[in-house]
Length: 352
Image (tube, rainbow, N blue to C red):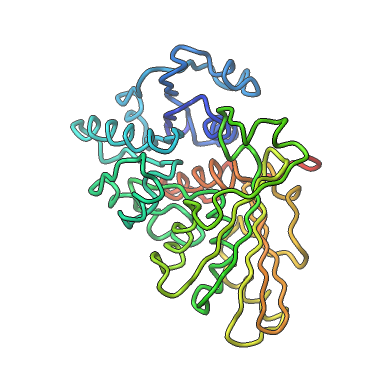
């Protein structure tokens, strides 16, 4: 039995399936409870056939907190959709806070419900999600490469968005020098839209097609600004455009910016390498990164190009792993005092 006992809220979605795949290879994790409001009593392999033989569990209506808190470390992942996640988290934490040992329960939310500190921005971008101002203030922003110091002691963590993760990692080494306009072109695979069928993610409409969506009004834009230290855009003017790729997995971000002084390619590479020297899942590559080198893994590959003051930064990651479940496990490792790479140090699927 591992030292970390885990429960997952919203067991039927892609996020939960990917969490379970990663939990299966983690030496310290024991999955205790899987909940689902629509699929109660279903064996998990019926919802995620690729997990057949790995988990002898069926979905339940609510978390068995007594069983969960028996372990040295107790962690709940919420893989519920935006809007539903924070409500379920608040209900569970309110129930658990009355119990002995409740302060040992750690919560990691994979939705966007609790990411934004600014309430006005939250209301603008997540209008169907409650504010929960007091609860919101207890959630650390969970991008390990930038916020390890806040994540390690945290009881509650808001996992970052997938497009935001790639964009923030691309720009963070230059954050202190950035002013004015930054253009972010962010392409994403269909699994980022979740398991529920939608017209825009239906295979016949996505295959051999390409489209932009939510230009200049995507919910990850304020999240990027928040992580870069400029939450309401006083210093930076970010132009963020998300685009749908004809792939199931993967995110590819290209960020365009202009520095105040010219920079050489070698100096720019050295700056990125130094910034991420202690970040095992960020790899700086000399050429443009490729999706096939990261899909299925928890790595984000970054490449840079420059000409005078003009800089382009490219980032590639798997939206379901480094953009979601992998970072959630990375956060669990930090919160539970484990090595950051535990259960995650595996290469990509190649070819995909």
